[in-house]
Image (cartoon, rainbow, N blue to C red; front, side, top):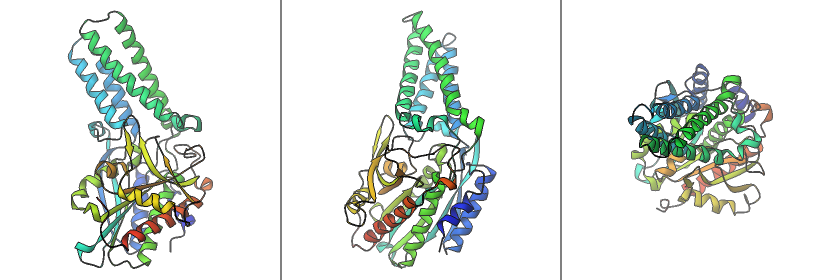
Length: 392
């Protein structure tokens, strides 16, 4: 049996688990050993990724600034500004953006453990238990006061990028001079400031230790798998997917879903994502998103809402929203694959200590971790023992 507190201390003994770093490699090895000890068939899947979102932010801001600076020189610069604004819009609305392929790449790895079902493939139901194991750069934008306004800040920044592109277009056409020129310079100064503020935490303090975000999610995924295995559900195939580069834009999960989604029977597949369970009340996420609202209106989340209303979980689990960044589960939502996203939120709807130096194992409350394991186990068991697929 996995001892959660001991496992968390083993995983967090590393200074950090930043994607595509030496410490990520050590963490991946530890997770492979753990899954092997649990009797899983274990593999890793490597992919290329920016090491942090810092690289992505610099490419976006640098591309926009370059285009804006060249507007007086060539009209081609207008197209350059619009191109980087479009990539920024996609990236910060949690869609695939080619900006994540720009130089500054490293090799990261998803760690996957699999237990096959014991029945005919036509009767098999597959559960994917997912959690990211990488850790985030320290960020000034995730402080307790800043978290609540993070979505608004992103929307404002994206809006100003669009305005900058419109001003560049107007200036290239000779419209509104000289005022559009003054505004262009003002926005260039704003973008430089935003890039500095948004990434200063990383340069000053490096990565977080990531005990709550997201060693707790990894522990919950592993223990849920262990308990489901002990139930000997013959028609249930179990896959534990521990992703990297979530903190760079859910990139590990994107590669996993893209590589395997065509092999899944969506009516016979259910995914559960565990993320940041170290403080607060266990929450089934109903909605995420920045400008675009991402709704978890799939049959798996509907089933989770029904389970919340039972006596076993009515006082223990809530539904909620999270609009500060997103979860690995976003790619399942976008591909219409049934998924449940579980996290823990405090009474103000925030995740304490995320992306902060204080996110250490000493500050973790294990109660939401155990609640997530109980809830996920009940959800999967109820689904696996019912006849018939999930509704379309």
